[in-house]
Image 1 (tube, chains in turn blue, cyan):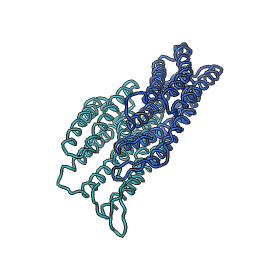
Image 2 (image 1 turned 90 degrees about the horizontal axis):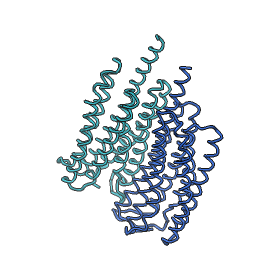
Image 3 (image 1 turned 90 degrees about the vertical axis):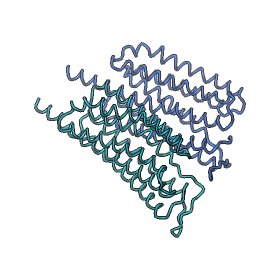
Image 4 (image 1 turned 180 degrees about the horizontal axis):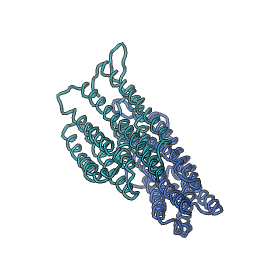
Length: 253
Length: 253
């Protein structure tokens, strides 16, 4: 635990509350919108909403934990003896990161055999990535942090290889009016995930104690919003367009 | 934090509770009503309800924060050492103001390319407006307040220009029985948004401490109810009428 200023406390406090509201709103949006898509895309929206719901729960917990770790009175911050539980993030990712890949696979509506095997392979690799990152996150020295960080990069690289190489051919076979969107969703997933290792490496920089804590928390928060709510909204747009395509085909058949 | 009277404390306390109830009720109304409109207008109602849901969450938090900042015993108000967290408003607007513009665009049911580009442009400008306003709101001197307020007015002007000039032609192409309503919704958006800068400028007036706090809180509360629940109900009426038009066309085709 590091010393933070009242402004830093407030910034993180408000960022957590904001993210809770965003995730809860995205959940409601994605679940309510299920009724607007054809059966093939309902599960993609269910899971996209689930990812945001799980994140909303964890941001509520993180908010509470943050509040319990510091006491702010008359603008003066003192640390309580209760530790801030950063592990909520890893617990969240362990559930949400595999599901995020599965929602991307589901919205492509591949043959069910491919959907199954891709979901299992990508989901397992993503879970492994999160598990291997955790010992580094809680390590007190930067060497241990670097070792686990590197190990965690192996399944990360595998997932990215699969997304860009393995899924490439399937994406080219998607309807023209969603092909660009699916590529953007894949890119957003890649870009937002690429953000996590950067935040993970903040402790290596010259930033001082309170700024590191604030930087790590705000950084992860922004990455989470983009990767979950942002990608979720894109999945919704893709699902609606593909449903319209299907309906059109049915109407003209 | 300023000294307020017991009457001022109660007035703000009850206004917050009233607004929470209004926003929660508007959310339920808009989401329940989704089933009455054709697919083209469902997303407009989903998002209108979402705006009110996000506002309800923040009014619940603001209410709690207000309660934690003052202690009222035997009609005597004393300040606790816990600061009132006014930032909830800005966090709320960062999410809801872009969504408010998107619901207005969605109910017009433009070609999907136009909907997308308008939503992104108006949404980003609105978010920028809120972000630029915040440093002024928390500034202790009126000069800093004025500088950020002025910067924030630039994206505000852009949004208004787009709403009145850019959307003008599209509104003229709307069915006759909703054209007036869409213009009213646009006007209400403009009028209620114009209210925020007025409230923002209250600290420049001669009003004393407790009256400023009370005036700012009540002012923002009224503007929020009009801009969110008020505009939401208009979006509902427009969506219902346009759905009826569509059904009529289908029936006579």
